[in-house]
Image 1: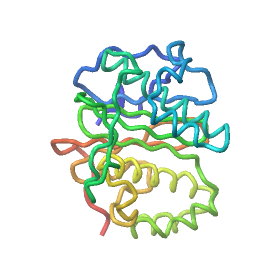
Image 2 (image 1 turned 60 degrees about the horizontal axis):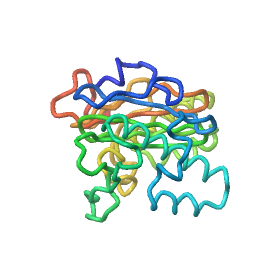
Image 3 (image 1 turned 60 degrees about the vertical axis):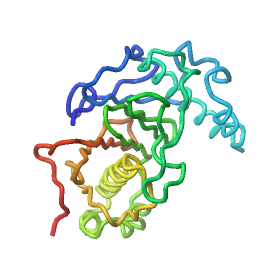
Length: 247
């Protein structure tokens, strides 16, 4: 899998890089957005761009900061979808696909009538967007302290837990964040989310992700203090990708 222009390539930044043209089949595109900075001109009127459901969800936030982050990330998503689909961002009709586990309407997000797949994640002041020809998942997280990472390590795949347990405290936060964002990206890509126990699928904690069968995982360079990853469904084997957990 190639993120944007190549492995390890820094993602494009919404508000700094030009908006894309209409989507054409090719490698995935990954974008970052700093939600604490102004969006491009067309996104300055979120009341016009967001749909009724998004406006209602925004209004339900108690804290202004959380509301502002939600509005910025969802406005950014619509701005990018509008550019890729060649339409007004406000005209993009967003739905949820059926959950592959229970069939409920809380699976992957989708744009009605579009072949383009996408996913959104946000944490702190950062939002991550991924777009691809096939199902895609994205996750960004703030790096947690070593104590928190060690407490949560036990919920992961046993091999991942063992890898983290063997690390000295200074290396633990980054390794845990790598693993968690990979796992979340994969589960969001499949549409199951955390209805699948995090202990089931191995994605690894080291510098190179282990890609589950049928998927390609890649870490995404993000801002200091954050980790990010993208998972893209593939229709053929990915050269060099690991598909099994260590035995």
